[in-house]
Image (cartoon, rainbow, N blue to C red; front, side):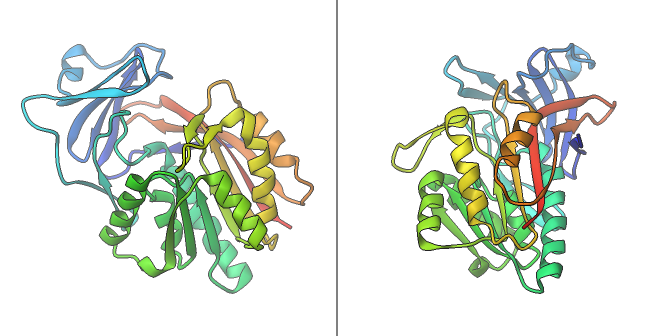
Length: 293
């Protein structure tokens, strides 16, 4: 097992966590957000937690309400990683447009894409499923790859385009597709489309562009099988992550091993390290299949 632990990147700091919450600094704003994994006690004092000027309070339906102390919601927030710029804003689910545990994933995608590009002697075709605001897509786009970014939400696709422009990348080399992921993958199979690398970061549940239902435990096996059949199998790679309660990393290894292609597989946990101690805040699991032939 190889865990991917993200360090605090410029503009982001995980100060503390505990009792179902986390305390962060995001683009200069001190933020308190729900964090169900944090079942331990906080280490910082109550006075330090009270320095949060933006607090997200979880609602019973899973959404959230933001309270911004003494001012309106912070505007024009941007964070930078490896020369890329990501626009931030606080959403009703307690998100901000960037999942900071993914920083280590971006590093993996960047390195694997560069290596595959050298092996193939050409730019790769990269498919990002459930792509959200495009951080991973931009990391691969930076290598010169042709990127296909799929999400069912028009709003996050617009957000992704803004990130491309902010980062001054070639918008002609990335295609943003508003589509249900399952439908897009089936369409690609029918048309005979092929990709050199795939990233899938599915939610536990959700709805597609036309109210299609997604349920991780019921649908993930078929999706993974279809994704393997989309790969060129020229030393391709496939990265899968999960944030579904109860699913463990060895389950991802098993599902990624089902397809009869030859491949190397590693699995592990995702997490973020605190800035002032060695604690890691768990943030999901992943599996990476490489050298797929």
